[in-house]
Length: 80
Image: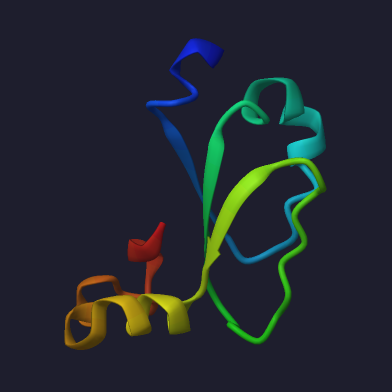
């Protein structure tokens, strides 16, 4: 699957630290991760070193989508 690394991103919704990525490192490390933080945007989510990732919080979604941010609900599991 690593041959798809330039064509595939892995999206991970979370409200907690991503320590579990250590166990999945052999599978996930070749890929770009898009992490969507649900819940309190002031909480710092910790990602183990060595992963290529982008982290988006509710405030980022609102900034990027502007008035269309309503399309991604954070009041239920829709952001996941």
